[in-house]
Amino acid sequence: MNAPRMTAPRAVAPDIDGLGTWLPIPGFGLLAINAFLIHAPQPVLVDTGLASQRTEFLEHLRARIDPAALRWIWITHTDLDHIGNLAAVLELAPAARIVTTYLGMAKMNLAGLPVDRVYLLNPGQSLDIGDRMLQAVSPPCFDAPETTGLLETRNRTLFSADCFGALLEAPAENAAAIEPQALRTGMASWARVDAPWLDRVEAGAFGRTLAAVRALEPARILGSHLPPAEGMTETLLENLDAARAAPAFAGPDQAALERLLAAA
Ligand SMILES: [Fe+2]
Ligand SMILES: [Fe+2]
Image (cartoon, rainbow, N blue to C red; front, side, top):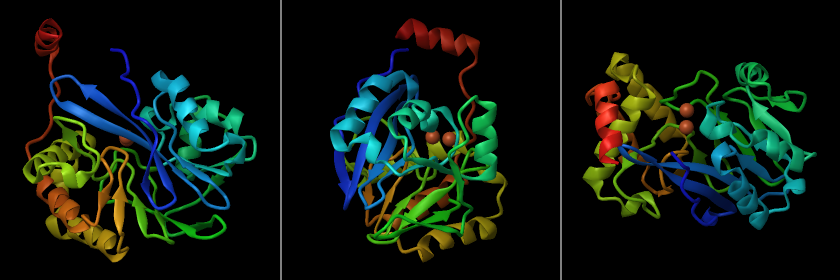
C-alpha cells in the first residue's frame, strides 16, 4: 500500500506545529500519524513520522524550521510510525540530541540507529528547553514499555504518544469536530488495538492512571494518533476508561484479508 500524501504542516497549539498524515487502515478507517515541532529557544521535534513519507516529511519540517536549529528530538517510543525518519533528521540536525529512555536507546541500537547522541530522561524528570520545561510522563495506555509522553509547562500542552488515539471514518481538523459517538467508538477501537491488555487492568488501578493525567491539568492533548484536542481532557479520559469494556481486537485472518484485497 502506498502511503498517502501528508497534510500541510500547520500550527496546532501555541508555539507548536503539527506534521501529520492520515494513514488508511483497510477495514478500520483512518489513523492520524502525527509528529510535532515545538518552537522554543531550544527547538524540539517530537517523533519523526513514517519512512515511506520521508521526502515529504523532511520538506514539511524544513518549511517550519531550519533542521540545523533543532536541539532535541523527543522519541515517544521506538515504533516505526515514530522513528521512521530519525536517522535522516539526525543527519540534518547535527546539534540535536535524542530524548529517550534506557530501553528506548537499547531498541534503537538493535534497530541499527545511532545512539551516540541520546539523552536519557525518565518519567518524572524534566528537560529545560530555555523558556519552559518538558516534563516526561508515562501515559495510561501504551504499546511499548519505553513510551514517554511529555507535558510542555508554558502552555500546558500534553503530548500523549499513542494514548488517546482514534480510528476514524474521515479526517478531522481537531477532535472537537468529530461527532462525539464516533470519537468514543474510534478511541475504543484504537485503544483495544494498541493496548490489548486494557481489559486486564482493574478499574481502580486504571482510574489512578487517568487521575494522574487530570492532575497535570493539560489545556490540550496532542496525541500521535488523534487530531488536536483542545480543552477536552475529561472527554478523552471518559472515552479511554470506557474502552476497557470494548470488544477485544482481532485482525482479519487470511480469508478476510483476501476479501478485503478483492474489494479494494
Ligand atoms: Fe506505538
Ligand atoms: Fe504510534
